Amino acid sequence: MKKLTTLVTFLIAANLFAVGVNTEKSQVEWLGKKVTGEHKGTIKIKSGELEMKDGELSGGKIVIDMTTINTTDLEGEWKTKLDNHLKAADFFDTSKHETANLVVTKVEKAGKDKYKVTGDLTIKKITKPVSFEVKKSKGMFKGSLTFDRTKFDVKYKSGSFFEGLGDKMIYDDVNLTFSLATK
Image (tube, rainbow, N blue to C red):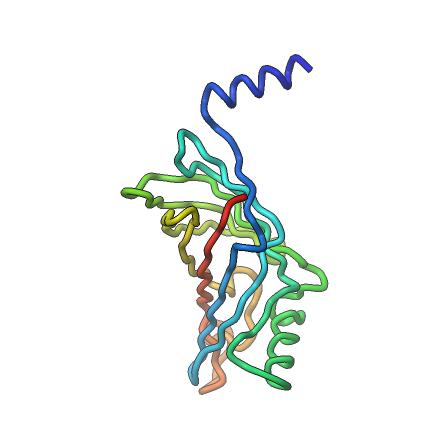
């Protein structure tokens, strides 16, 4: 009990606390491009918390539910095919890797309500560093980050690994745009 009291006292003195992410009001949108166009969709946040110190963002962790990958620019049979393919072994293999994580390792103030964030992104149990900007607006933390899918063993129709794909090539970069609401 004494250790818990000491920890609580320390956190209050440092004005450091964690705020839960409201998974119902938060959203993540993805965008993937290929030679002949692009596809976009959503993916749900399973859980998360943001660390705050003196009213400023100082850290956090977000867990993404990879099984919820959803294509929003297609309908019917083509939507079902793409959703299932994105969940399959040659893409994100969600039967083996149900979640992806982003752990914030560093936050720097970049202006009024703006932050430069560095973190570790884990997809398919592979962790790579990422950097991106976040802006706090009307109680939401908004931003976008781009990652190279091939660094996470998602090589399907990548021009970096396969020759002769022509107009079937899919670009390596995937963009995630997010809005995180707190509880």
